Length: 106
Image 1: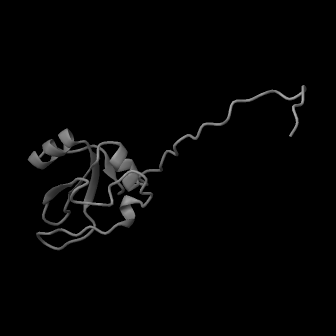
Image 2: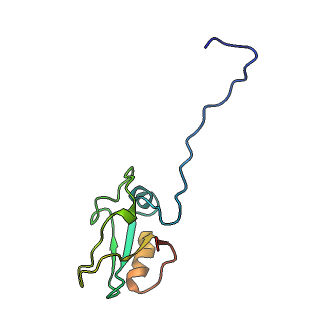
Image 3: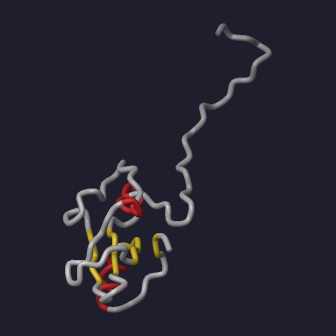
């Protein structure tokens, strides 16, 4: 389009990251915001912290939703654990027995 003196020059639009709905957290969000996914079994209360080494899905750019993945307890075999997004420091406190406030999903 040729330069038109009646048109204003505008800056190009910058992409804004989408804010997910409640529980709609992707593995990419987990990687960007701390890189640790904590889970607690609802049946036996076993707690584990998954980092990038234990869970290869936690990587930048992975758009798969955390709630769509299947997690299984290694102690009792139950599925559907409570999932939390955490930093490394919060994960250490979580494994020691503290509660986390950012639960993913119901």
